Length: 305
Image (cartoon, rainbow, N blue to C red):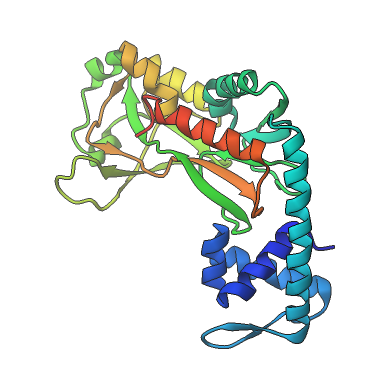
């Protein structure tokens, strides 16, 4: 059975005549539109569009489907406007999933503040280190620390974030500061598992605009490693070695002096906080409100680059 989002996609492709134009209108990638359109045609057992090198034109069945889709969507909008007129308060349930560490430290307090502002919205927060199948498990969105490999999700940035190399003052006093990323090969480093794979290669890039902007890959060595970011951070604070940690995790120890940014001119840049959601051309108002709330809140955070 096709749903409302599918109808919006069919109309967008028909009205724009190009996958790229439909994707821009819907706010998703062209790959996501292509994949979803193929799934719709397979489900219906018909070709809705004839493909040429320049444009997509509707088949007879596609034109009929588009006309019916427009009528159904008009009815949906009329229904929504009448229901919303009866209740101006945002309400309903939101189901979210987030990375465990970030979710506990930074997301959970914002969810509580959001729910206090909108008491008729109920929020269910799951913490996990593996991105689930959002659509199959009924999640409205994921707040995630790396972009998913699949193109079936709509991904947008909530906040910028870097990973920095940190160590304790006691470690720096005993072993000195690395002056370049290559110097890290002479230091004891703490390895962290990323997506179940231990990261023994750190990719760093200059932030100050001087010298080459090309990333530098450094192979690290050390005797301690963990799949827990909190453990790696605590080892670094205890003087066990240097760690590559996201700013959101170490901003407070850096401010208090428990940790030192040992390579202040370098960072790993692939650590933005992402909003990942199933494809929906018109997400519920409550979900849009939460997304904007988080974006505004994280913009004020000291770790947001």
